Length: 262
Image (cartoon, rainbow, N blue to C red; front, side):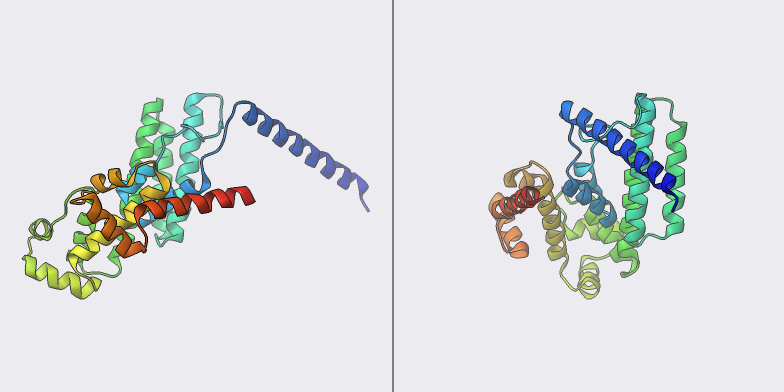
């Protein structure tokens, strides 16, 4: 038996443990904590769902609170984090249905753009462009396989206007269709009325906002343009079975319980 092999393996392990310990100690002394994993997961899922407004709410600027230091040079540090972000999003999108060829092509494009940046502002701009690019393509992936072109465009319109009052007349005008035809087509393909689909999408966004932002239920009601807070609560309870307040409290209770058990 080659004991020298085991000796050097043990030394390597000790060296790694020492480096890891020093890194963790340095972060504790600086009161550094990584971003919440649940929020990070929700961020990636929002991209994969094609929800650009929620992506904007959950996204945080590169190298803001919760980001580790990968280089002592600020510009290089930003570029490294951009590459990590692109790599993670690429794999989440592939797992959610984007073709590997398209995903990796987008990845290469944004990484090359980031590499060419000469200022921190340019890197942040590429990061924002990348988030929007992947999200919009995932939205097309999600709805493009199932529905006709008019319904895909209608859903696209709804997704981009969740924070406005969405009327079927506006969407019909946008698609150059009659209201009656769009209504019948929507019911036939989506298996629910246009207004019901709009409410469902608004409530899905509201639920994510309750979980991962500090907005109150009244603020969310206003942001999503519900006619009143009482109507928002009524619609929210219809789809989730509980009020927004109970939903938020239950989520945070379960999350705190999970953290204590870890």
